[in-house]
Amino acid sequence: MLPVTSARLTPSEWLRVALVAALGGVVLALPFQLTLGEAVLDRAVAAEHGSAHGAGVAELFSRTEQRGGLVTGQLLIGLGVAFVLAGAAFLLAGARGAPDAVWVRVSGGAVWAVAIVPAVLMPPLPPGVESELALGTRQALYLAAIALGVVTYAFAATLLATRGRGWREVAAASLLVALGLIAAAMLFPDQGVSDALAAAELEEFRLVSLVGQLLFWGGIAIAGFLVLRPARIGRVV
Amino acid sequence: MPSLPPGAGGRVWGRGPAPTLPSASSGVSQRPDASSHLAAAWRPNPVQRGIVRWAEGLTAAAYFGFGTFLLYLVLFDQGQVSDVVLGSVLGHQNVLHEFFHDGRHLANAPCH
Image 1 (cartoon, one colour):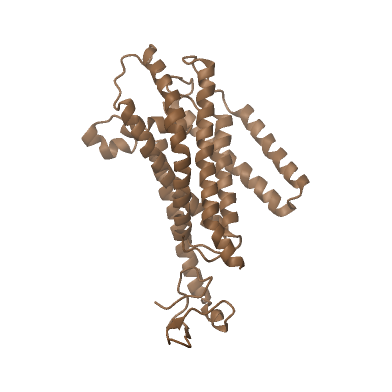
Image 2: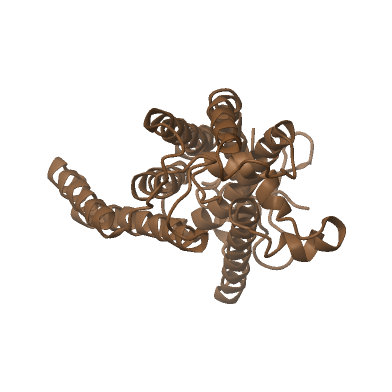
């Protein structure tokens, strides 16, 4: 049990909570990514090597080593996300708000801004599927999609905090966020992907990618909430 | 270190020895409960509160910055950092991009 007893947590207390939560997210997502995710990636890499573009290209790491890279990378992503969320939770929490409620708001925002919005505006591309856009442009668009997710989530949260949380307010906030997302989808350029992979394979990869991210971020949200729950109980009693 | 009242968040406020309650049976210092008048004595002065808030805000910002840098290395680096750090050993081969290849694709980070 973490020694969390006060309503207002210090940055290091937030970090401890976030590290445990991130570990929960990794534990939930990694088995899925190593089984279903890697199976789809293996097929995509095989198709890439069989294509004119990828034929004869020497890889720096074998597929087994890249699986190790997936595990290492996922653990490092979890570590990085823990530090980011701990900093964000402290800076956004202020002096008010139960820690578990703050955590749900922050990690819920991350699910929306990092997993869902980019998946809608910039759907992931598997290996072998090329885009007409330059890599730097796609990276900038990906970050823009995350920024848009943060802005829309903050807008909705502010609206609900100031206008109340009745069904009309929730419906209005959801509608405004959806309209913002639709407008952004029309403004974002098409990635112009090549047809190196069958459409069904591309859709399967995108689904696997999204589910893996939802498991990761959902695991973080739930694990953090469970870690912080005793703090609320201890404070109330 | 004297014991802290509930809600102190693990920090020692104020100067001098902290107030404690003597135990009736053993004489060992006990933690004052929240209802005790001693709990009110734990309020920091405005200067101390400002310094602590500033230091905590800086720490939180440093956490945010470090986490962002870590995520950049795993999800975005295309040799800008890895070639500088590892280039003399491994050559300019975009090592991080190749090693974290699968994770980047599954995390929806633009990879190629």
